[in-house]
Image (cartoon, rainbow, N blue to C red; front, side):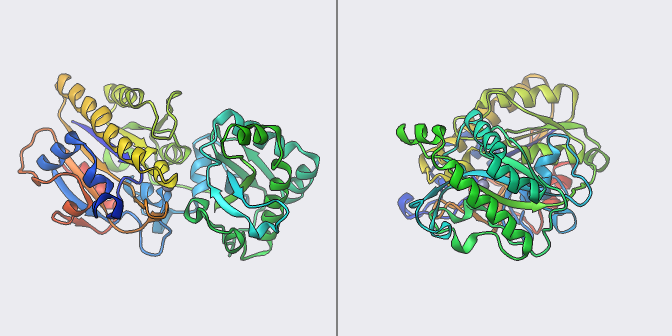
Length: 411
Ligand SMILES: [Zn+2]
């Protein structure tokens, strides 16, 4: 028996006026997803525990059977784990996004606007070059050294920063994707003395990056400049329970984002990267599917995570949110199941959106998401319903994402 998990990041949404009161899942053309859901179990699951900020960190931890209430210690340390680097005692780790700040540079920093949490989905080489340049600038380096801060370039907008002795007690750092097109004043670092240190670094970064030749070139080409860094997702060392010990299966996690790879490493699964995967709607769906199938030759468990629907939503791109869900159904789930069938393998497959991401404001939501579990042996009668948020209301309701893995591995 093989066990497969497919996560479409941020697929689930709320009804939209521009879709005639329907959700993207309700309008998209995904016959394969719907056929699995009709023949399998379809329900709703509360992946985000009450009181936790909605995001893939807590949601995906809970999907992998790790209760965030017990184990969550910030997103950035989970991502750092993907590289195999252990956080030194007392150090703090942050996400250091490349962002686009709007407004005029002569205005006070707090008056600037959060235009893009990803500097317009900046490419890895430009992003790495900019952040490496920034941390080497004498003016910035002096501040960073005094703060104990160093950077780990991340090959996309997602860099990490490690701060020796970083005090995060009481600190409030805002996820930039939840505040798109808002003034940054109210969301700047606050809450303790160290927040002022981070703010000073962010202001200096903006001053230095604003007219970097790469940014001038990006502007000239109609692209968004990466004229700021944004610290958030703070945390200290992370430890998670072992997946193989709990479920008796070895395997891996195919993803383009460090968060999923970090969770994989921490639970004892293999992190699998695809050179042609982008973490956006234009990713290499076929290569990700092939990597999952390769894992399943020698292991019993494979997870495939697709970031595309979430990023498209943050970028207010409804067309490609729908497109990436359709690809997940027809170019990932369908060939994956066909190949397992051809190999003569029985399998159980869990498909879900880790959390909702709302087209109306580009932010994550904490309300329950639809999940489906399909068993290739088809021994029980299915839900008879396609995979949508509303149809999930007719099936079982799981109070916690941690109930999913036991359910997947139950038979
Ligand atoms: Zn997101």
